[in-house]
Image (cartoon, rainbow, N blue to C red; front, side):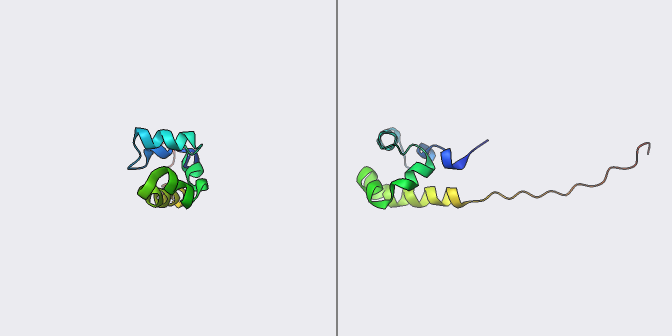
Length: 79
């Protein structure tokens, strides 16, 4: 089960070991914590990648998975 707000920010494309460590040190190891840092702080930590990472994290957090299924009635017992 993936709980997106707590999913690790390091899973975003472009976050390698060094940037991942910076984000963890800034207490932004999860997607929701990364978004909470805001654009200015992310730019300080990530340079030019800050806004792209913020957009990616926001996109994942706002995505909603919708499942639908049709279930057919079982035939009567004995047929």
